[in-house]
Image (cartoon, rainbow, N blue to C red; front, top):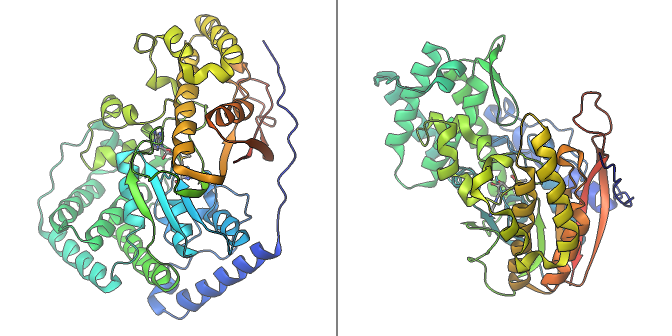
Length: 458
Ligand SMILES: C[S@@+](CC[C@H](N)C(=O)[O-])C[C@H]1O[C@@H](n2cnc3c(N)ncnc32)[C@H](O)[C@@H]1O
């Protein structure tokens, strides 16, 4: 098995005065609001904040960002730090894979214009609800009250699929269903209605009696010891949202433009618009973003189960998981012959060929051969779209990691550098944040990997 080791990249530097000032400013703002307001105190975010290189977990400590747990790729504080460092320059920020909206929220907080594109309809709705922080907290609370009243009287339906029956006991599900009906009834096109929707969505994993892993997977075999009642989880979510929007309204300007759009085209972004791109694209690591929201989408009646994810979600996304590219759905030779892959063809063809033969020896027979080819074709198109919408010069930062499906090393960073240059950018550098796949005993392969910032300029 090949054991190519990644290029030794320089590590990213931690800490700076700007970052320190940002933290102090944030901590003061939290104290100002959450400690003076009696009701907000119970939902005050934890104050031990963030290093600027950290990942999504830290966002769960930040107002608004904490409403929905999602694989964000980076912390909002790091985005603010990048913006603060560039103060005084002409800043127009684009995140073509905006997910749950971290970049756009951070830009709003810093008074910087931004575009955020997201192709996953459910995640786009979550981001859009988070960007509804300009709503009125009192109107939200009144709407929530009316929803609780309706839920008390409503008749629960119970034709939920198995997954939902495994996650919630009958009484919990009964209440959640009545509240879901109430949320539907409250939908009147207002921002407060969207906030009520996100409160329900955000309370689901909290109220689940089965283990709900941080990511997509639900662990029906594992029971939680004492989850809160659904009423308590919903009350807490609503209180948190009300307090957070008061916090944001004092600090942020609603400048962000969130679009449901495909990063491979960036069709909704004007030519030559962006001066800075900050993003974390899907990694070539088989993570299925469609599956990430399966529990919530099934509960809300948007899909019946896993089988519906391809048509409702996956088909819109870049192809970064083997579930997306089953054997007969892709003509590998055709994909590898695409003109967009010319800059890396000599390297990607042998990698895909090797994956084609290894998969036949493995029980799972995962189609990593197709996945890698399609992933780089999709990202090559993204680099071309970015060249159109970026000004010259522009700085582009991808938070990205390399990968090694079936132990075959894929030099993601170097290939992205080549694709970016072929699309018309001038140069690239990479700083490493952390090593991956070096610690665990039961890892699937022993190829050392890393994750960091790919900066592209020009
Ligand atoms: C690593 S996540 C980004 C998370 C984000 N930084 C946040 O704050 O939540 C990558 C995102 O890219 C989205 N995505 C995948 N393919 C896309 C495409 N073709 N166009 C736009 N977004 C896409 C996925 O749905 C996912 O939300």
